Image (cartoon, rainbow, N blue to C red; front, side, top):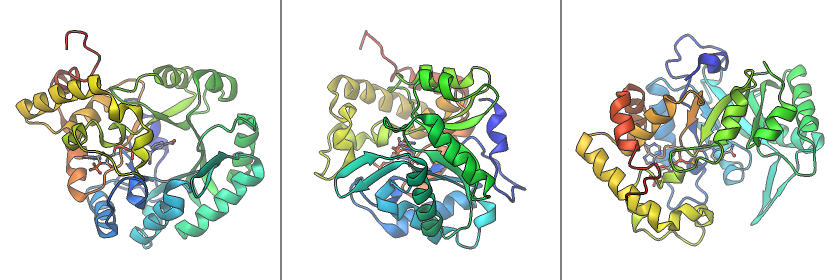
Length: 313
Ligand SMILES: NC(=O)c1ccc[n+]([C@@H]2O[C@H](COP(=O)([O-])OP(=O)(O)OC[C@H]3O[C@@H](n4cnc5c(N)ncnc54)[C@H](OP(=O)(O)O)[C@@H]3O)[C@@H](O)[C@H]2O)c1
């Protein structure tokens, strides 16, 4: 892991031990991830803060703004001690989802986020997804304007292809780029590599546990509820992967490490990865993430090798 992410620190940052591990709050908003308990979400955030985490990732899109409201509720008295990363450009009404990352829509999204987060600045404001109808540089230009106005501290992007990175992100820009990547979701590796060429991006890996599939044995058998967003994820019904997952869970048990810790450790050790953004839901999940920082690399490689494509199994 490269230390570029050190520049993305909270305003008051005397003790920030984990700059490479942020807390994602998508599922904590309470929509689309099965049963939800607000008290658990709040205590998870409080536990994360108590254990030294200071970076929290959200989006106006998540749970129709409720993930942002949750952060405001949890950290109303600690605003300057935490780093809030949020996003705009992806919209939803009911079941309809659409892109609008025009300058006006991004400004609307930013104002809504500021209101829900009860703050007068956002640390990192990102283009959630590139909008097929708006060139990425137009969206970036709008966000640079927000920065000049003092409404945001840093500009970021999400889900850009390697071609887009080379076309729109100049060498040396070092802007945060969120990319879905984990031991079973590799197709974005070229984007991570493009981000490292000439220090274009701080690579922030999202859904490191493939929305829970890689760390919770219950998903080997459990049927998801009708409204669960993971019904759209084909890996949740991939039988060959589930077979590999069983080997992985067994190996983790043999080695005495948790699946979440081993994947966290594996990702943090990759040269293409600067930041890992998991989505814990319960206070005890924070413990696994901390274990992931400390794990021995050879142990991590041993267990995660069960997850990587292995034709013999
Ligand atoms: N920029 C983007 O487009 C984008 C896209 C996706 C995600 N993200 C960001 O990435 C974050 C994480 O992604 P994600 O929510 O999709 O899922 P994830 O981190 O891949 O998986 C989270 C799920 O793993 C399970 N889990 C079990 N043990 C855990 C542990 N020790 N720590 C954490 N989770 C554990 C929980 O499921 P159970 O409920 O089964 O316990 C939890 O809901 C999001 O919250 C969001 O901030 C960004």
